[in-house]
Image (cartoon, rainbow, N blue to C red; front, top):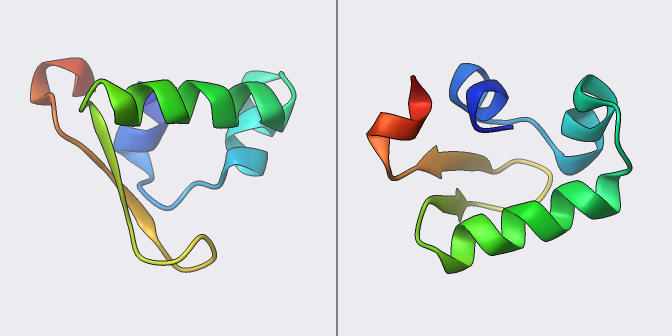
Length: 60
């Protein structure tokens, strides 16, 4: 999931779920955890926003 977000910062939970092959609710739960751990920050609105990965080591 981190790799996909580092390649496309504007992927929605639905698109991530399609690419990974799991339901979007699981993606939403994972995003929530990553935000709680300070690894991921969402900017903007859900439709026009983007993701920022804070821990640069995880992008690789």
